[in-house]
Length: 404
Image 1 (tube, rainbow, N blue to C red):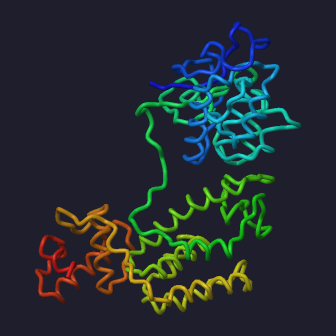
Image 2 (tube, rainbow, N blue to C red; image 1 turned 90 degrees about the vertical axis):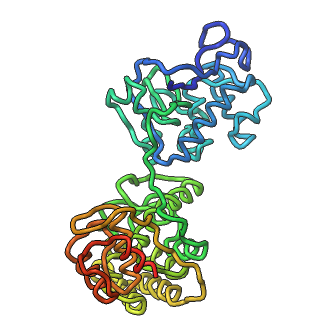
Image 3 (cartoon, one colour; image 1 turned 180 degrees about the horizontal axis):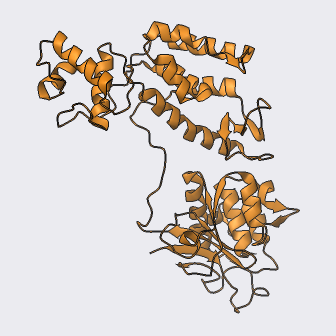
């Protein structure tokens, strides 16, 4: 069952005039979802921010010191500000209304106060949508599949009836699975690699274009995309969260090359991919051994056909890290060993396992999970060289030989 939390009404059934604090236990409360009707659903892009908003709404609903009063709606903000916006730490009776409560919850989730509070006044049900949209940290849904039904809601979603009421989802049961970028194995970029990326990316909390001709804006530690809006401002915590999310994507891109790497090599390639993209990473490693990869890195120092000093320094630093082989840790095969034969036109992780293992034997395959002619050709060659049945089918004996 979907449940929402909201600031509802004072102890007298009115919008103002009651005593400070929750006199009935229902002024700020958790209840089952209902169709207001809502006309907008606002969703933070980062799961961690959604979870923090939901956490705030649960805490504020369970704190008897926080009640409802539209006339004193900003007193919640004043007291929350003194305790890091954590409503469970408020011990003085105060008041909020539906929109000021959600506003403070969004600040607790990671937004800056100045993004949602204008001249000391929290966002209202009429201004909340645009103020949140301007942060660039949310997606907006107006389709009835979101506004009129609970089935597609996530914990931390904001339900808005513009000009009337706002609430936030605090429980969904098992209705909707989270869509998130999943790390493919246990190896991830080290602090050394993160520091390298931060050094060259720098951190800017306001949206900018590094090159005027770029299609999209950049913010934080080089976070680039259509979700970054002109004039957008984020907090340091948001910049760190965006970096962490982006790193997973580029870690996975390095893993997908199928190369066996030590930690320094892995870090260097993650930094390279973070700056140049997964497509250029594939081009960099295709058909090259580790020494050739290290040397080829230096070629990626141009933008718009012009050599840039900053890119040259970054490629040199990445190459220096890549050729430092003092770290013993290896990635290993991130894909599970197949339990059935892999043959021409097979697809999926069984094929990726095979492609990865063949690459450790010196073949230069793209780990794409498709057993095409190149993959089967490499398999036939491996079988021939290892006195196996040359049938182009990776069965039990071939798998055993690949693991030697």
